[in-house]
Length: 262
Length: 271
Image (cartoon, rainbow over the protein chains, first blue to last red):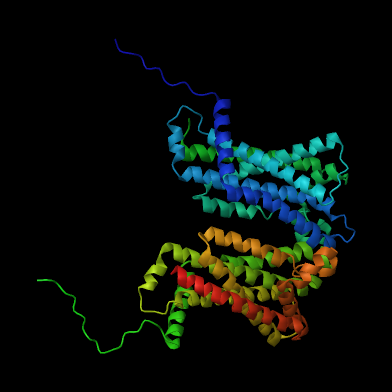
């Protein structure tokens, strides 16, 4: 009698995601250099902008309250950019071919990188907040405002991480992914992150006022410090949702094109 | 019958050391090798071409209005600052490339050649002055395009540029030392950035010192980068050679006096 060989049962989506999230977090913890940089960058930027530039940019001494949202977004962008390098590394070192032989949803690899990056960046954001409080940041937000601010920050990190993951998928190598990602890190500078847009030349003000980062920063700043938000909140959520949806679709399409469907 | 190696008398005495003339020639050849590397891999010049352009545009247009009221007033402050920051940062490459060459084993090849042992090190340091010159010219050109008109005139601008190149060459000895003693190129980059980041940003390069907290001002005032920036500003904006100029040259000489022997000794020991 010939024994019937049953095909291996696919692991549940949740279990697969959990394994790949754990894998990405382990990689992060073991990459000491990147870990130190992720902690040092917010500290250096916070101290630099508060003490070196702060007095010149806001002689009133209230600059720390203005700059914190910008530093949070800049550090989130920097932290998320490592997702592009990690994804590009996985796509070029042959590990994806190994995963494709297993009864798992191969897109879980990318989801793992994204969720791990989100977790890393939320920890980095907490570090920024802690340091900000030490150097004089005094938010006026209540519980609901804090919750909303954390929600917007999380949504932004998720959106930008998916964008970096998509960049990592289309880049030919980890160094190329790093190069492409570097360009995105300039966006917070061309916004109201560090200086009010009305102090910029007219042609630059047009760019700064109409790019995605400015309404996100204005929303976080408004929620934490009570400055007027106007319609920035709608634009912030809209931009984040658009980037998230677009990046997710781009990443899915790129992954299936490169690694095949499962 | 035993095989024996026969030494033929060639009629010329064999030396195990190189004279000054030969050392200079070998160093220039190695410097030419450095220039060839730049020609073959032009992406090496990204830091000296893109950085001055990006930093000048970014700081001037984004922070200029907030710091000095308008872009035009900020240019005489920022251009010398960006110049010093960019060119000094470029000197890190000396140490990184030196370490990469030593890791690749190319220095073992050089050891087997009848050349001065110091030539590869001296050549690398010499070739990098070209990088500093490119960064210096680009920064001033970028400033000019944006509306910067140095009051000191062309002659003093050239002196300011030469001062920055000389001081950067002096600083490159520090990074060459790191390059010789470090284990990897990445660690050279890391150590160098840790040293350079506070020195360049905790200076008067970007904002006036009097806007900083008192406890920070004392460090900024003794920071050698601040003296160099002030010297460049005096030269380019006022056409004056003052105490800052002398102090910068003395600092550069002191760095070379300390780090050149250290680097050469470490280099000779490693090769």
